Image (spheres, rainbow, N blue to C red):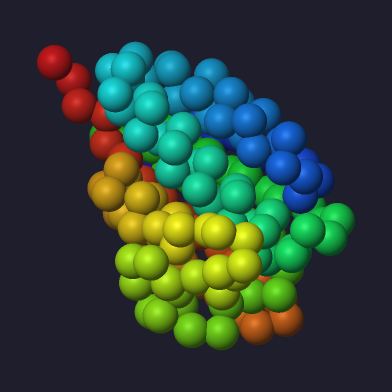
Length: 143
């Protein structure tokens, strides 16, 4: 499948950059003329992925998060959120609803569930000590 357009950004793992990532992805995806609902779904999924990198990947320490987005020929957006944080010990367990490694932070443990709900596909690749890559896709439906 061909790529119509692609962008890559890298930003520090600071909580204020979560909003920045949402704005960037919204501006990029707007080329496909998504509905307000589709755009909100994508922004929410990106927000969850970036927040996971900040809270769990880097545990509040400074690091960098990469976000790569591609617009594919079939009006699908593919988004990668990549960190070089601590990684996830058990990806299958982490993807279960309400699972959290940080209950003291009152996190809901719904990040991956939200990403799965709002996107068409979600893949999570992680290696302990090396980081995590979240890959999400969503097809923009033409009316």
